[in-house]
Image (cartoon, rainbow, N blue to C red; front, side, top):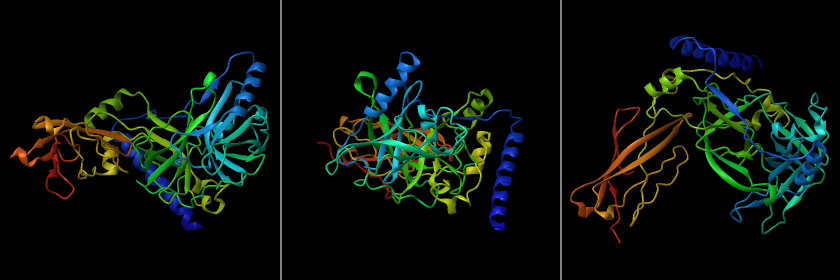
Length: 430
């Protein structure tokens, strides 16, 4: 236990010292760069307060969840519909036992039944105000269950705090397999799969949701929250994916298919003239990536009581300047291009786990010797968009091309060729 405490202390002291160095090297700072946002997933209803309550309860009870692609929906994923004084709140959730669902605290804390109960975090009333809706498939029908009680609320106090709640349903769902809960946190750059609910339009179209999945990757020490740098942190950040309304509470699966976290929001950059100047000086395109943030199940005391005891505390937002930050995370990694298929029109290079690449090209068959391409590289919360070109080697009849990167933040220019280190063979035109 003494070693664990010492490890936590050393970890915190190290990052505080680094933050102070970064701030002092670039001048005094009074504010943080990042701010957190919960997706807006409230359907505000019209009428007097009593009328809104009636409408909200009816909408929460009648909501539904469906799939976009048959067979690709996880039966454990739920649409959580919550009746509030303002209207209907819709979030994502996931079945963790036959009669218990995990979602965000901020999704349920406005429930009509929780009014006057804000000082408690266990066994809270929710009957008639909170419902969980599950999609159907070839093996099972669509189902919904009411809330018997809210077993636990983490009591979230902002985007940089743990944010989860456990809902006990009013009946068991025996035909749906709950997710397996991970005992470890996300590794840096580990592939992640978000099983999310996207809100339907609402109103006359109904208050339902559509389930689909979103691939992305965990990313320690992002630019917008560099102090989240451990598998043992209660929070994790992830990139290369877009968090939208209704995604709050969505389960995040690790590469082993286990529930390792739930979405709670995303981070954005505060407006700051000094920071914008630094970005122009040190980043290729002055941009930063959308950074998602979630709570890791490894540090949820209600699910992992033994493991959670060894989790480090949540560090505050920091304010590293770009140059200091880039020095900390080290050089950007280069990677060779995968094989690209071509015919009459070139297709986009497939998305990879760690780097999202999109190439827009002119077809070789139109006798163009050069054509432009672009690459979007998400690295630690910063987007780099590289302009590049393909050049057809002579003789043109051989249909070979070289990819040349015009600008690079790490080497001042480099050439990318095919995976085998030679040239990219282009199929003959049809």
